[in-house]
Image (cartoon, rainbow, N blue to C red):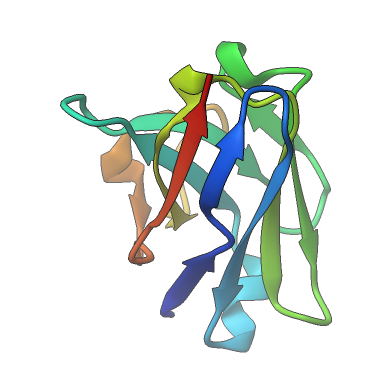
Length: 125
């Protein structure tokens, strides 16, 4: 499955942005999907995961209460609603499909595949 991430842009501290991750095939609906981000000069880090069908979600501590991951099965799309943005949220955001058989709470890049091309979010102070 190919993923297309979009929705990034320039925001100010406290603003909101919503990122989208569209899957190219119906199988996307049966996969858990994660968001990662990579800030300038830093390694890519985990942000959030949403389960395939249960609705369960999982967040990295620094985004809990500010970011919400959701999915629209009809549109074959996963969203990342980002509120109360901070300059430290500046990064390229990537979506990826969580590989079957991996731990639910995994934060490891190797446990995800079919990476999208990334979308840049820049938050100014």
